[in-house]
Length: 193
Image (cartoon, rainbow, N blue to C red; front, side, top):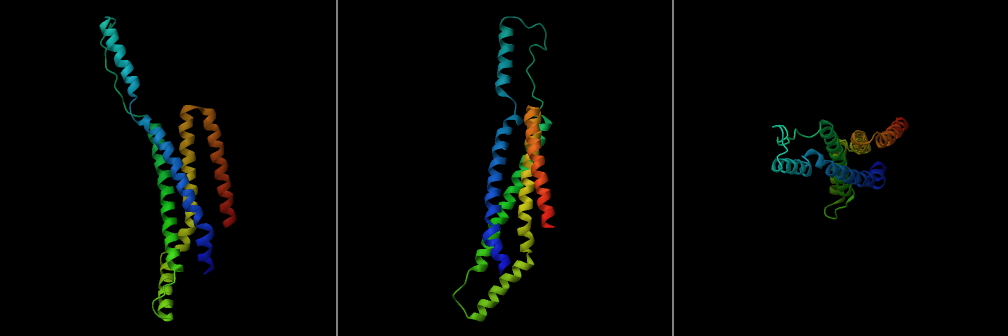
């Protein structure tokens, strides 16, 4: 059918490739920000060495000067950013997984088996077509771009929030591009309707 040909040749490579790309980008930021979920061991070592040096030189005047620094856990904003990045990664991986499964399904649908009679071929092909309708294949395929747009929106939001903690000017640029992407996405949704 023309609908399957359209999905098989024009729309299907896009979700798989783009979903993989979004997954890589989200993973890079997850790995980069992961260090902020742990204590800064170099800072702890520096503080400990300072305490030891002051104790050996007898410069410690109170018990609080000699107290071992306690790590109270990561900043809640960093945990929030990581959670959003993992959500973006999960959405892009899910879209990629569904795109690969759909491509495999279409390849099996279009495959012609040489065994059996023409009637058997027709029954088997009809069985495959019934499966496509039963599993709402067209709706699943139409949801793939929405999943990828959601993944990209979550990535933009997480980066905006993270950069807001570091530098508000960089965050402003990231927020601007994310808002621009949202507007383009909304305009494309209006065109589909």
